[in-house]
Image 1 (spheres, rainbow, N blue to C red):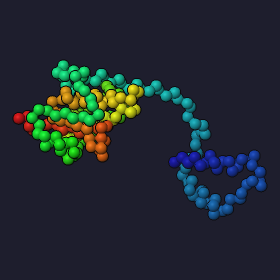
Image 2: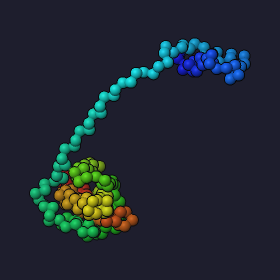
Image 3: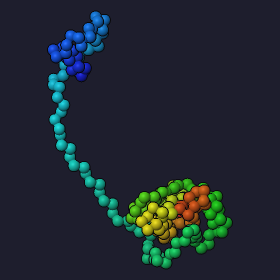
Length: 200
């Protein structure tokens, strides 16, 4: 057992310290000190380890370019108009279900926040998020895309991209802007197809 306190105890015998600066050590205190350090060994040296140059950090691998969420040849991004309020639904979907989605009556099971992401990272995040929703059999999800106030041109870039990306996914039945209390025009509710029905 090595106790670095021994280095301090050696200074008690430093001849540079005058007798007036020394405080006499009482016998009980000395006995207690000896009992505490019994069985210890003095340090071999008082020097710290020599400086060792740390290896250079390993660079983080660059992520591959974001792959399309679906076949983008089916729909051109220029064909999609993005308004302040988002609303999209597949043909045949009941209006009652769309109204429930718009009112927030279908509770989102998962949520994705795209704030601060570039378009490439956001596209990959949306794709992986929807795949996770499919795996967990989530019926409704919420995607926070923001209102674009933080972008350079103060335009909702991610909102436009989300409006386009979601239309390419066959498992997306509908989506709309969230109610004001849940993000308003800065977030979207996404209604997903039931995986069991898609198998049939």
